[in-house]
Image (cartoon, rainbow, N blue to C red; front, side, top):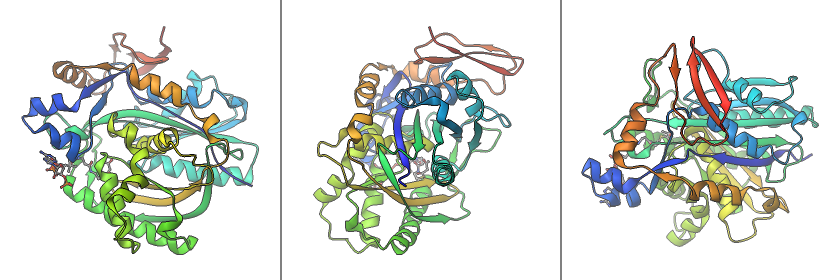
Length: 390
Ligand code: CAA
């Protein structure tokens, strides 16, 4: 029985900042952002947009072609959650009107959390082939104004329906995992912004990649050249280039030409370049980017996925693209969403940033901005009130 991704869709806020404008405001060369980090635009959530609204928007699209009554599990992966107790997925479950006989829970391990949900869902479906699982990952990446991490911010959500009818990607069972207790990136409960040891985090990412690959290749018997396309967790776009160079090196393919290496990864980077880091969602927005932007037919091609969550947990696994995958994608809707976004001035970006949400407000009303189909309307007596946007 094949198990994997039946449908995949993503959502990003309606507003973005051009990275050249951020560079100008910070007095750095724009090429550092655009070429050095590979970021052209950064998604910025307006007040009233949070992980729940973004996830609900992505999930609504992913479920368009799916029988919702078969969804028996909703996993919400995030590191920017809205409550310490209640799973954000319960709001999504309600907003989408899913049937009540459903397991709903939240997973956390930095940017790795969606992969944990995906693998857990695949294992459960092996025992219960008629069920479908909705995996949503949503995050707002915030480092702080003027910090080195600022140009690697972003926001967005991805939703995947996992089932025994995988129209988009058939998951292969082999994987390599790696865990190490490191402080490369973390966010204490008292803070809205992440703390990060930036250069160290890049080094740990590469170390985790080498370790996870080693176990994957030993377990599967596959080599670097058995993989046709490579998707990596994307904190910033050029991280994929560093990762792919590392993988070529540790797998004995140091001589792979720069052109070939670009071809291996380029299609997976198109969306990240104009969205920025979406933490738990970013690997899977990268997968969507590959499937929707590759000119060549990917039918039968093997795609690898490297998931990295700081702290850290990593996993290297793979899947094969089934025939007919293109008709299961939402490429036109994604393109329209990205093309109709509104550009912010630097001052508007700072205003949105500062009005993100005061810490633990008891009561708060949100002005109406463009937020897709769902918005956070208010907080009353510490309770979040979501609604369908008119
Ligand atoms: N023209 C072209 N390139 C330029 C340039 C210019 N004028 N100026 C600088 N560059 C290049 C640099 O050479 C560098 O490239 P290399 O790494 O290939 O050498 C790149 O632009 C970035 O420049 P710096 O290294 O000087 O940038 P920085 O010191 O300001 O920090 C960063 C970069 C560490 C990534 C920082 O943005 C950061 O801390 N980001 C958050 C942490 C992060 O994203 N870590 C990634 C791994 S952890 C993870 O993956 C989990 C997660 O999601 C957070």
